[in-house]
Image (tube, chains in turn blue, cyan, red):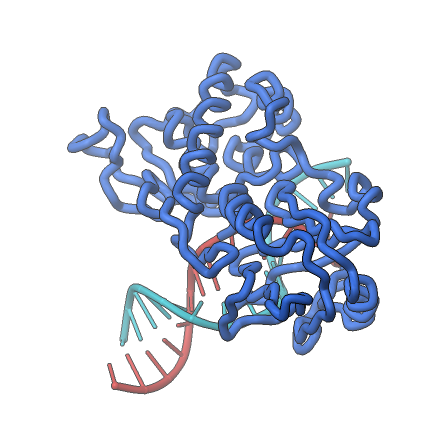
Length: 288
DNA sequence: ACTAGCCCCTGGGAGC
DNA sequence: TGCTCCCAGGGGCTAG
């Protein structure tokens, strides 16, 4: 599912092909047969009509990632925000049978959002109002930004002292972009049990956590992201990070950590933490 | 302000 | 082979 490295990969791909292009029209069937609660997204028919008016004729000025969101900045000082959720793909010049949103571009190519499960959401706001946006405005720091550090990581996680570390890492207002796969892989690498109380983890562990977090995210980006579920990049191609998983989706398998190989009890387990699955090795991941 | 639990959705895998 | 059931999960929402 698209987390930081996958959204990054999509955005990097899109940058080269949609920036400078004019949107001539937009089509969607997202509002057909879907419910959306009270939230204002294009699944709401009236909101979609407003959205259509807004993007029609606008030029794409730039594209960027913020957390798991794709921000498309338009020449008319509006920005639209795409969240791919579980099975969304934002693609250029490619289509599949799950396309629910199409941006027609002046060069007669299409930017499409396909989503088998229709969980993806699209909203828009004034570009200068982004910091007040209901979700984007509340996102925590970017783990790969230059200004991020081990100290910041500690400060942010301390905001969820009483939570299990697994849940704290997944909170987008604490850190932007980490999801289920990368949180499992990070905790496995540094040997911390997912149920550890965030506030009880020794302070000196956070330096290592910071390094490992950046290492894993960068490694995945290098490999085009993770397509264990069904991620496809901007051109419909899969990533390779799924071939490097150490714990995620490895329940009942022997832990591959050097000290755990061939050891009894070093069998990957899965448990549910706040409704999310967490995979871990009971042998080397310590519970604080 | 918190949090547990439901909901959105559908392909794929397990079990029979 | 073909059916049914259950699972995956980000994050919004609601009831307590």
